Length: 339
Length: 289
Image (cartoon, rainbow over all chains, first blue to last red; front, side, top):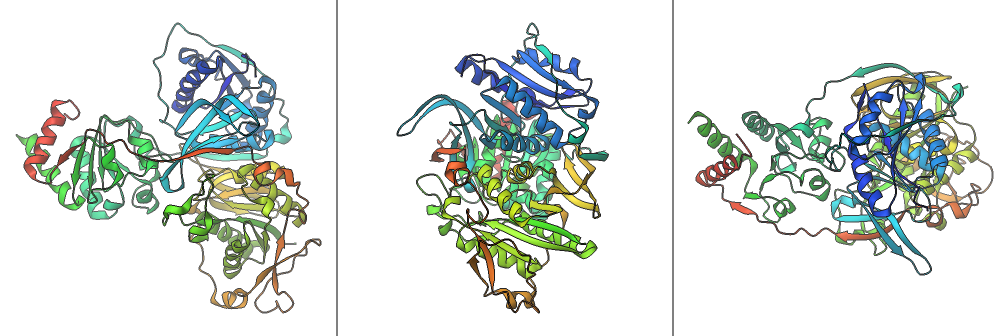
C-alpha cells in the first residue's frame, strides 16, 4: 500500500446538513491517517449538495469524491452500494469508515460482499497496529475494537488479507476536533456508472418523525437500567430529569422491554452521549452501555449491587434501591430550588 | 402459482444467560456452553412469511447454517408452520464470519432454485451486526429492503413495505425477487402448534445430495417424509475456500476481559444529608445549575 491510498469516509447528508457522525468519522480518519501517512478522502452521493461538502475540509478531509445524480438524492441500497464499489475500486483506499446509521448499516455490508473484504459493525475504538501469524507479519493495519458477547469481553477484529478494511461506528463515539476555517477540500465530481436498472426501489413516501429526545445534545441525562425497569421507577426518573432540565436515557434491556423508545437508548447500539451529568439508575454498567456514556463529566451511579461494574467508572456511587434513593434526590433538589 | 419464500434462521446462544466459559481461547464462541434459542428477529421473519402465505398462498422454506444441533431451530420453524426446512451443516462451515455465512446461504438458495422473497431477521443477538441480510442480497444479485417494520402490500410481482430510516420511516416498493430484513416491530410471532410439534419433534436430519425437491412437511400427509434435509458444502456446490475460516476476511486478533480501573469514586450513603452534600458539590462544580 502506498502513501496515496487514503483513509476514506462515506458521507451522509440530509437536508443539506452533513450528518454529525460523518464529521466525527472524518476527524477519526485524520487521526488514523496521520499514523500511516495517508490522506483523508470522502465519498458523497447526492444531489445539489456540493456546497454542503465544503465544510469537510475544515476537519481535515483533503478530497471529496462527489457522485451527483437526482436519483441519488434519496438513499436506496443497490445504487449506493454499486457506486461505492466503483469508487473504492478506483481509489483503492486502505480503510473505509461508515456511520453505523440505518443507511451505513444497509450499504456497508453490501459493499463488503462485492469486494469480499472484512467489515466490523459498531466499533467503539479504532487503532492502527500490527499483527503476526506464524508465517506473516502485517504492519499498519486497522484494529477494530468492539464489545462482544454480552459485554464481558472486548474483541479486536482485523481483516489483514483483504482491502480495504471497513468498519461502522455509531454516532457520538468518535470525538470531533475543532474545525480549521483555513483548510479547504477539493471536490472531485466522479461518474457513478449507474443505469436505470440499478434503481430497484421506489420510495413512495418519507415520513419524518420528530425525535422523542436528543440525548446527544443533552447536558444532563437521568438514565434507567434493569434495576429501574418499571413504571414507578421511570416516573421518578422522568420527574428528576425534568427537575434538572435534563433528558431520560436508558440501557438497551429497558428499551427492548418497550417502556422507552429507541431514541432513549444509550450505548454501543444506541447513542453515545457526553453530558455534564449522567445519573445511572439501576444500570449495571455492561461495557456496551459504558461505551456510550463513559465520557460524561460526572457520573452518579445508583445500584443495589455494590459489585456492579457501573461503580468502576462512577464519580459518585450510591449503593441502594432506586425506589429508595430517587425520592430523596428529588426531595433534596426541590428543597434546594425553593431555598 | 403461489410465492416461494425462503426464511433464514440462526441458532444463537441466549445472551441473557452467559456463563464464564462462553468464549474459547481463539476468541470464537463456545456454543456448547450456552442455552441455544432461535434468534428472536428470525421468528419475526418467519411470522412475516407465514402471514404472506395466508394472504397470497406461498411455500415457506426455512434454512439455517449451523452444527447438527441447530436442527432444533428448524423444528421450531416447522412447529410454527414452515413447509420445508433445510439444515446446512459441514465442519468446513465452522468459523464463518458474515461474508462466508452469506456465501453458504447463497449456494443453498441457488440449489433450492426459484424464490420470490428471502426474509431474514434484522440482526442476530450474538453478533448484532445486521450484515448477513444485505450480504446475502448482494450475493444473490437481488434488491434489499432492510429494517422492515411492516409489510404494507404484497402481490406476485411486487412488495411495499414500511421501513425505518434515520429520521422516521419510509414506504418503499420493490419488484420481486427481493430480500427483506425484518425488525421485531413487524409482528408478534405465533406460538408453536401442538399438533405440528407432535408430528415433527422426532424428525432428524439426513444428508442429501440429490437435487432439491420441495416436499411439504404437513402433519397429516408427511407419511413418506421422515427426515429433515441436511446439505453439506458439496451438496450445495460451495467452494470450500469461500466457507468457514478460509472464506472469512475478518479475524479475531484478541479478546480481553474488561477490567475496570477503579476511579476516584466517592461513596455516598443513602442518607439525605449525604445526598444533599453531593448535590452541593455538583452545583459548585457547575455540573448542575
